Image (cartoon, rainbow, N blue to C red; front, top):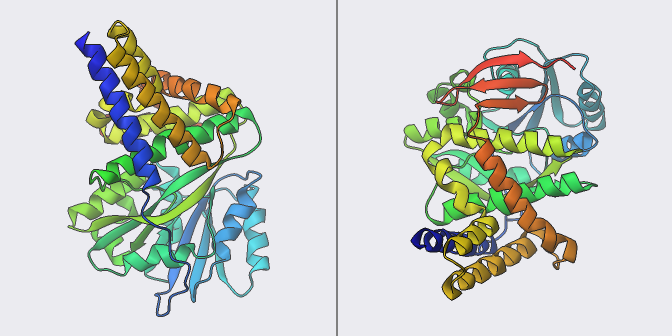
Length: 376
């Protein structure tokens, strides 16, 4: 019975913390254009094109910033994203937009290999690395670079919000980001954690990157963003979570895509934070609170904790959706938490990760051991 009370209390405390952490997000990013900002190179490694790709990439070209360069990196000259990059190069003739097409591999992490091929074309010493599915506002660059001007800062990164497109699967995928992953980042920050680094934004000075071992130091890492943050902190430098929240397009088209993407994220977290990951089942609050209630024989105290957990979970959902709760959503989010708990359990079964059209075998220390092509 005591085990049920422990589970119920843990789920309740975490659900309240998650709601408070998301609700207490510190302020909003400044909207003023600053003077005297250093020139910046934005590195965008690309692979494949989705319906959102053009808008996402365009948002990085359309920045209110005095001097910046955009470098698009593509491994395959036949990739349809090449046409989008060339279109933006034509659309922004006043910008320094470079396109690097280079298929050389420098390690088992293909994105990092792409970045290594792009880096020689970077003209400036302030660098921003960002994934291809990220959309930002026109003040993004100013706000991200501002904290990086402090010499004790190694990396500036951003939390992100999943923007669902049409369809149930996209909505389900965005809920995983907005109602589980991002709140967990906010809770960690609330209690003093500073380990979060996201590929949605990594702002870093060139000299810091070099001192950390360069991109080659993470060329075989699955969680390349996390490892880069770890390497810079070993230099005694801070990781700053920006007030900027960027948007990530969620375009899952099937249940299998949802499962595949989420298992990759979960197994990546497991590779870099094995102890914390093994205990994070309490973050799937609704099913854990229900299990706790059943194990405590349905006592009034257990039902009280379940009710508090459910209320905090509803408030978190409303806060992240910034809309009133509908009946469909009220049904969906307990199912969403249950699916996440099941995937968490499944993630311990193997270290096999699907990454685009490849299967990646991950070692216990987070290295990519092998990459095998998936044939249709």
